[in-house]
Each structure stands twice: as structure tokens, then as C-alpha cells.
Length: 614
Image (tube, rainbow, N blue to C red; front, side, top):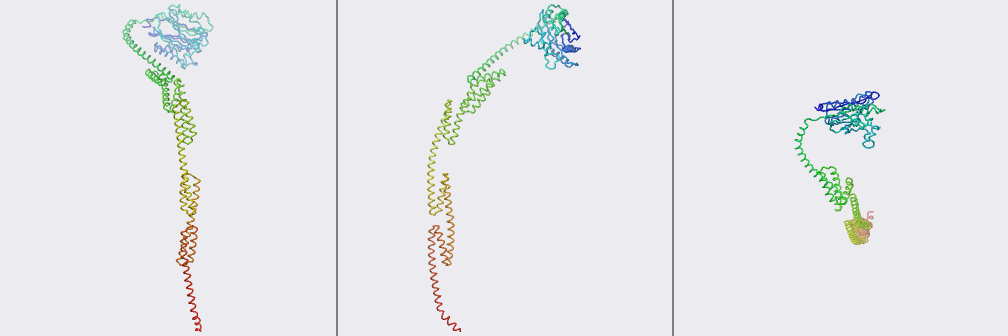
């Protein structure tokens, strides 16, 4: 019913060039509910000029199969034409510009790829016009080229979108626009618009009747009257929308729509009010969030990180509720910076300088993600922490030297720590350095007292050891080597305790001498005891002379050993032996005398016997 109740008239002209080759094409189809008009300008140089015709036929066919005025439908028609040119059985790569116009007899929409043009005229005025997809048109849009020079610019056919494009095919699809009675549309290829400007074209449509053929003839006459030398193939089409379709149910539809619309409007109004309230609340939250964020930055710049954390937390909570990912990410970065600084300040206050330094370094790294705010404060805190650590490093060095009893060097380090702490107004460090100095002086005094006591004890021990040594020497000089050894052993223990190596060596020498003497004594005593046993044996056998000899040998050994008791004992035994010898000699004398008497008495008898015998 739409087509029958509307009046659309179409006329066109399409002429070949001087070689009788027409690379343009125009076609249209008017269905009951929709109409489609297509103009195409072939870019290839083939004699058969199939690009434009193939594009028009493909679009008309796609439209006929699924007529629609929707944007997606026009895009589908153009993509079908682009694919048809890409897959065509041709020796050359087919390319073409195209403009397609679709209407439902009430509204229109056009799609374009390349530099074929569309114009819509109303009451003699140009109301809508397409834009070429060329480099020249981009220069016009950028105001780098005068629009009047576009038709002769060398880049007017340098297209960034056209049919037959293998990649990045993005044709332009217009919005829908409403038609009015007596509107007129023009579709034209570059053979027309390069030689007939928009002013002449507008005049031709301004003087038009209700017959599009008259306008087509008028435009063609304008084109040919100029007798352009480079005139090639050209195509021009005019569509007159003398009467658009009026829906007979329009009033009833409007009434029904109003009836339906009232509750919808009320609901929309209520929703709008709610949305406005929500919007206002959201705007208040956004304003509060932004203010808290700005306050965070200001407090950081004022080195007030406690208040900065409060404001930052408020901004973060609002950003989360508003689902503002950008502000949420920014506030999270600021919060990490603030928390690192606060942790560093707390550690510095509590004397945990290594933790403070670590947190301030972390804060400095975090500042890169928070617009580098607070860097001056962080650097100042880092420097302060480093100097505080230097104070305690000096104190620690002094402690180490003090443990090694290097009191003068330790005192120097403590004094350096005290001076540095005073320079930094670091009261805690200065107090600790002074306490270390006081402890150092106390340790020095205690050491001196201990050294005095140790010296006294050492002197007393030296005296005692020397006294014992003297007693050992006295015993040694008297030949009492056992006592000397005992005294020397005691002296050795004392000198060992004193760690007096010279005296230890001397005592060891004396001990060795005493042991040597004792060994010699033991040998002589053994020898003497052997003589005594032999003497006793001889005495028992009443060999007094031999017994005397062995006793004398034993006496000489004991005399050498200075054993007076043994000498006296042997002397007494020698006296007994002397008595025994005297008795023996007397007995022998008496026996001799008796023998002599016996011999004398027996002599006469012996003299008479021979005589008798004889």
C-alpha cells in the first residue's frame, strides 16, 4: 500500500566515454514497502566495464531478498557487493565507488563507499549531501583545501574506502532522515560533479517541475555546454519524491499512542525524578570524592599524612561506591604512599631506624604512581633516618672498640656520635652516646681497679713463688733433693698460674736437676745396699776382712751421699768387725803357738823312730 499511495519518479542518464566504454552503472527497484536506488562508478579500465554493473546488480539483488532501511541492512548490501567484486572471475582486480539510497516511502537512508555523490534538495535548497571518502575530502574537512578546488584536486580519486577493498572495508552509513512532499534527490558520478558544481546543480533543481527527466536533461545540457576536454563516462540520476506515503491510521495510531504514552510518560517522569535524585546524589558523591581527593593532595603537600589518610580513605570509599575505576586506582596508589610514610614515621619515632628507612624507600617508589607528591618530605625523612642511623653506627663502633679494651678509640667514636646527635638535635641519640661514654668511663675505672688488684695479687703470688723456690734451693744445696723437688713443684704451679714463662722454664730446669740428683742418689744407695749385703754375708761366714772391705765401700758411698746415719751405722759395724778380726788373730796366734808346742814335743820321738827302725 505504501508504493501505491506515494508518488516517486526516477530518471537518469548514463553515457560512455569517447571510446564507447561506460564504466558507470545505475539501477533501482521499487517494492511495495521499500525502494532502493544504486549508482556506481567503476574504477577499473577493462573494456567490458563490469565493476559498476556487478556492484549495482549485487546490491539490488541483496536488497530484493531482504528489503530494509536499517543501518545493518545497508551495511550488509555493501559488503555483499564488495565480496562480489573481490571474487569475480576477472583478469584484473575489480574496484568501484558506490552510493545506495533506501527508502520506506517516508524516510530515507544512504550508504556510500568511494566518491559517487548523493544530494537531497528541498524547496530549492540543498538539505543533505554526502562526503567523498577520499584524501581530498579529508583535506577539506581539515580546512587545508578550499572546497571549490576539490573537483580538480589531484587526490580526489585517492580513496580510502571503495568496493573491491580486501581489508579495512568500512563504508559510511547515514542516519535516517524524513522525506517531505516535493523533495528531490540526485545521484551522480565524478563525470558530472567534476564539471557541474553544486551551485548549478541547485539551480537546476530549484527550477524543476514534477518531472525528473526535465531536470536530468537540464543537468546534462549544463555538462555538455561546457564542452570539457576530459569528459569521460558520466551518470546522473534524479529521484523526485512528489508525494510521500501518509498512513491512514496515523490519527488513530497517535490517539492510541497517547493513551499508551500517558502512563508511560508518568512512569518515565517518576523514573526521571528518581534518576534525577540519584543523579544529584551521585553528583554530590562525585563532588565529595573529588574534594576528598584534592584534600588528600593538599594534606600530603602540607606533610599532614594522618589527615591525608582520612581524606584518602573517604575518597576511596566514594570511588568504590561510584565504581569510578580511575579515581579508585589513583586513591589506592595515594593510600599506599600515605601508609608507607606513616609506617616510616612511626618506626622513626620508636627508634626502629632500619624499618623506617625501608618504609620511606617504599614510599619514594610509591610516589611515582601518585604524581610524585610528598617527595621533599620523604627525602627529608630518609636523610634524617640515615643520619640517625649514623649516630648509632658510631655508638656501635664504640661498643665494639670498648669490648676490645680500646678505650681511647671507643671514646673518640662516642664523642663523634654525641656531636652528630647534637648537630641533628637528636636528643635520644645524644643521650645514648652520653650513656655509652659514662659506661665507658665506669668500665675504665673498674678495669684500672681490677688491674691494680691483679697487680697486687700478682706481686704477692710472685713473692710466694719466689719464697718456695728459695726453700727448694736451700733443700737442694743441703742435698735434700726430695724436699727440693716438692718445693720446686709447688713453685712451678704458682708460676704457671702467673703465666711467667721465664720462671716456669727456670723451675723446670731446677726440677730436672733435682730429679737427676735423686736418680744418682737412688743408684748410689742401691750400690751401697749391695755392698752391705755382701759385707753381711762375709761377716756371717766370719770372713771379717772381706766383710770389712765391703763395709768400707758402703761407708764411702754413704759418705758421698752425706747419709750420716748410715755412715755411723757402718762405723759401728766396722768396730765389731775389728773386734772379730782381733779375736780371730788371737785365736790364730794361740793355735800357732799350740802347733809350735806340739811340733816341739813330737820331734825326739820322730828322731828315735828311724833309729829304731834301722
